[in-house]
Image (tube, rainbow, N blue to C red; front, side):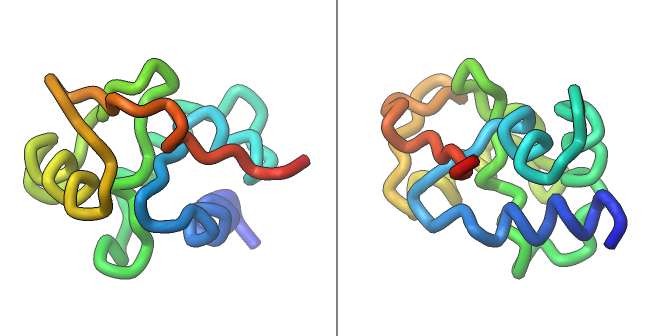
Length: 101
Protein backbone atom coordinates (compact mmCIF):
# COMPACT_ATOMS: atom_id res chain seq x y z
CA UNK A 1 0.00 0.00 0.00
CA UNK A 2 1.50 3.37 -0.96
CA UNK A 3 1.49 6.47 1.27
CA UNK A 4 -1.59 8.03 -0.37
CA UNK A 5 -3.59 4.84 0.13
CA UNK A 6 -2.51 4.68 3.79
CA UNK A 7 -3.52 8.32 4.33
CA UNK A 8 -6.91 7.88 2.64
CA UNK A 9 -7.57 4.69 4.64
CA UNK A 10 -6.77 6.41 7.96
CA UNK A 11 -8.83 9.48 7.03
CA UNK A 12 -11.86 7.26 6.46
CA UNK A 13 -11.73 6.51 10.22
CA UNK A 14 -12.40 10.16 11.14
CA UNK A 15 -16.13 10.39 11.88
CA UNK A 16 -18.43 13.18 10.69
CA UNK A 17 -18.34 16.12 13.07
CA UNK A 18 -14.65 15.61 13.84
CA UNK A 19 -11.50 17.01 12.23
CA UNK A 20 -7.90 15.82 12.15
CA UNK A 21 -4.69 17.79 11.67
CA UNK A 22 -2.40 17.16 8.72
CA UNK A 23 0.33 16.14 11.17
CA UNK A 24 -1.83 13.72 13.15
CA UNK A 25 -3.01 12.08 9.94
CA UNK A 26 0.60 11.77 8.74
CA UNK A 27 1.64 10.21 12.06
CA UNK A 28 -1.23 7.71 11.92
CA UNK A 29 -0.31 6.76 8.35
CA UNK A 30 3.34 6.23 9.30
CA UNK A 31 4.74 9.27 7.49
CA UNK A 32 7.36 10.97 9.67
CA UNK A 33 7.19 14.79 9.58
CA UNK A 34 4.62 14.37 6.84
CA UNK A 35 2.21 17.31 7.21
CA UNK A 36 3.12 18.69 3.81
CA UNK A 37 3.01 15.25 2.25
CA UNK A 38 -0.54 14.82 3.58
CA UNK A 39 -1.46 18.28 2.24
CA UNK A 40 -0.26 17.28 -1.22
CA UNK A 41 -2.11 13.97 -1.00
CA UNK A 42 -5.32 15.78 0.03
CA UNK A 43 -4.96 18.19 -2.89
CA UNK A 44 -4.84 15.20 -5.25
CA UNK A 45 -7.74 13.29 -3.68
CA UNK A 46 -9.48 11.59 -6.62
CA UNK A 47 -12.50 10.70 -4.45
CA UNK A 48 -13.57 13.87 -2.56
CA UNK A 49 -17.14 12.59 -2.26
CA UNK A 50 -15.89 9.40 -0.60
CA UNK A 51 -12.61 10.32 1.13
CA UNK A 52 -13.54 13.25 3.41
CA UNK A 53 -10.52 15.50 2.83
CA UNK A 54 -12.55 18.48 4.13
CA UNK A 55 -12.01 17.06 7.65
CA UNK A 56 -8.25 17.68 7.52
CA UNK A 57 -7.18 20.98 9.08
CA UNK A 58 -4.08 22.70 10.42
CA UNK A 59 -2.92 21.87 13.95
CA UNK A 60 -3.75 25.39 15.18
CA UNK A 61 -7.39 25.01 14.14
CA UNK A 62 -7.21 26.95 10.88
CA UNK A 63 -8.97 25.26 8.01
CA UNK A 64 -6.16 25.35 5.49
CA UNK A 65 -6.87 25.02 1.79
CA UNK A 66 -9.53 23.12 -0.07
CA UNK A 67 -9.19 22.46 -3.78
CA UNK A 68 -12.84 21.58 -4.38
CA UNK A 69 -14.43 25.01 -4.13
CA UNK A 70 -12.25 26.93 -1.69
CA UNK A 71 -12.11 27.38 2.06
CA UNK A 72 -15.71 28.64 2.30
CA UNK A 73 -16.93 25.32 0.87
CA UNK A 74 -14.78 23.42 3.39
CA UNK A 75 -16.21 25.57 6.21
CA UNK A 76 -19.77 24.97 5.01
CA UNK A 77 -19.22 21.21 4.85
CA UNK A 78 -17.77 21.11 8.36
CA UNK A 79 -20.55 23.28 9.77
CA UNK A 80 -23.14 20.94 8.24
CA UNK A 81 -21.42 18.15 10.19
CA UNK A 82 -21.72 20.18 13.40
CA UNK A 83 -18.20 21.63 13.60
CA UNK A 84 -18.43 25.30 14.65
CA UNK A 85 -16.31 27.57 12.42
CA UNK A 86 -15.54 31.26 12.80
CA UNK A 87 -13.03 33.23 10.74
CA UNK A 88 -11.82 30.05 8.99
CA UNK A 89 -10.92 28.36 12.28
CA UNK A 90 -12.63 25.63 14.27
CA UNK A 91 -14.07 26.94 17.54
CA UNK A 92 -14.28 23.71 19.51
CA UNK A 93 -10.98 21.89 20.08
CA UNK A 94 -12.91 18.85 21.34
CA UNK A 95 -13.70 18.23 17.65
CA UNK A 96 -10.04 17.31 17.03
CA UNK A 97 -9.63 13.60 16.33
CA UNK A 98 -6.56 11.70 17.54
CA UNK A 99 -5.80 8.20 16.37
CA UNK A 100 -5.06 5.66 19.12
CA UNK A 101 -1.43 4.55 19.32
